[in-house]
Image (cartoon, rainbow, N blue to C red):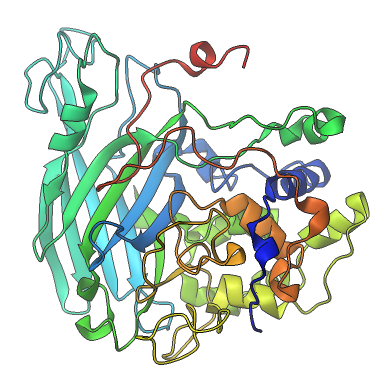
Length: 463
């Protein structure tokens, strides 16, 4: 399949994603919502281990490096004290990289945490005075972490650090940016690391569940996740650190996904998995969602129902039945490339340094599997397009994922046939009018904006 790009790719298509998601939920009421926020029944009850989003992109200000971001704990209400949000000390949090196409991890970055809790029986407070540094004695609860790099050669601790605390408010943390900046540390082998609270950077209007935006599209235009926070693990490393045999030119494509391993009486068990956004929500059927969270990508091709839902997906049929949009012909080989193999071709030459016409399809021993694929040789776009590859911006989703990529709009347009025809679906071009996050991405690592400290219902009531 050749993914053809046209000027019409610049059209906003947001309502497509929201309407399609709504259709899915109305007909399948057990299906959860958002980009892997509460995406499966079991993990919905365990937010500290629920991986919500994964991002992977060439660092715009350090283009010899790649930035990997993964978020956990969906819908953190900023004023959720006195026990604010923190990582699970009984779990291992992982970002995994496949650099040879076999869908098995070749490099794993793994974080583990321990609590430093000075409260005891003396107070209920998170802090008993203003906090001006991560070592301030007024900060009564914090977390420390260890970052381990695991390869076929073994495991090596490459970093330790202190988690940036939850943003309690201005009285407690007069300049939160100081605390966040102090939480950025170096790692062995080059690069930087960060763990801590961040703004919820995923943007979309989820009020679709009110009978398709109130039944007349009157409710579009509000970012449902605005004002909420998440917990972020971020890593910026030289590209050679994750490339096959340390050589980016040998194979510039890597597959990226995140997992959570939770301790149980039987040992560590994988309870959450996320690569591409929306796959577990609107591709995998409800009965397989928990199973999908528990397996590694190399097992995907062995589950016929998962492959079937890609080649013959449910969502386009719902769009046809409810909105009269003709479902694209099957089998959907275009979706196989997007979700399971990587895209073989872009529109014209991608980069002179690439030795093939491949966008992000691995040139090695490819095994179809769901993960976020990034071609590290594609140069940083001077003027990013929120529609990514569909908008003619080959550095964008589904070639990796940047903070500004409008993944709902892109994914639903693709499901509706845009990748098959090379043109956007005109009937879905109006958009949900949520085209960007309310807070812009930072210009330097960790790029994802800092967390809000204002209660959501106060900040946005009446809006």
